[in-house]
Image (cartoon, rainbow, N blue to C red; front, top):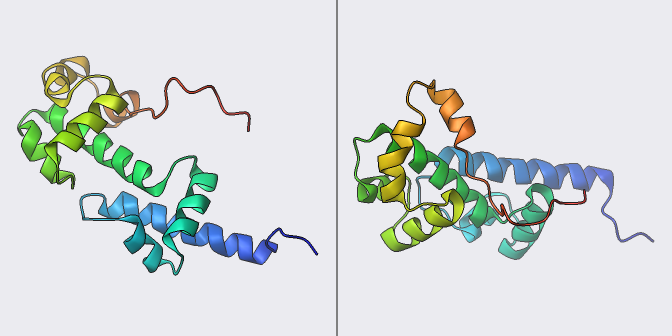
Length: 146
């Protein structure tokens, strides 16, 4: 007897993980936590976290924060909102956590990015600016052997 799930179950799990990822992409500014995401697809929080990491290379929370930081970068480049306003606009409830995570992913604090980001992407179409400024998680991690 094999311990591997049957192909139909594996497809079902992947479909549920995709629904979670799509929900994060759509509702990143809403208060989301792993428990609520797991309930939405009838999984336990632990199982969702393990399966999500296996499928996408990061936890649901890390994926959520990356989406929030990505959106924050776009808002900061616009320049019409303060760092605090951007923090709350993207769904973060703590300015300290937002600033720490932003700095980890982007390499500079949000206040510095706000000043320099607009200049760095000046003249670029927004779709190109989004692509070239996309935060990269685990820059110093060795490349995966997949």
